[in-house]
Amino acid sequence: MYSSDVKKCAQQIVKEFFNEILIGEFRVPSQMEMESYLLESIDYAFDEYQTIKRIQRSHTQWGEERITEELEKQKRRYEKDFRSNMSIAAQNAVNEVENLVRSLKYTIKAWKLKNL
Image (cartoon, rainbow, N blue to C red; front, side, top):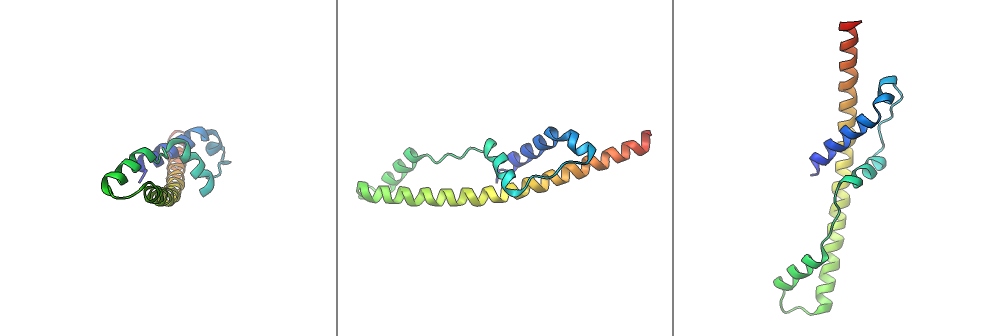
């Protein structure tokens, strides 16, 4: 999940810190830092209105209190799933940054051997 966001985020980090990578001072972001980067590009939107409408259509006999309880239950499940997916996406982004940096260093080394 979020694979295109992971790749875009990793590419942006490599572009942003290109100079640090070249001089060997780049540090791959931690899991938490990567989650912060990803949160800037991933839409976290729980649509309460649509969820309430879906619950009301599915359970026409339920009262307002029961619908509110179910809404909160679904919201908690959504947030739990989002956190779990975000953690996985952050680890994938860390791996992607490491791969891009490794590839960049290899390409630079090959260029130096060929041209210098």
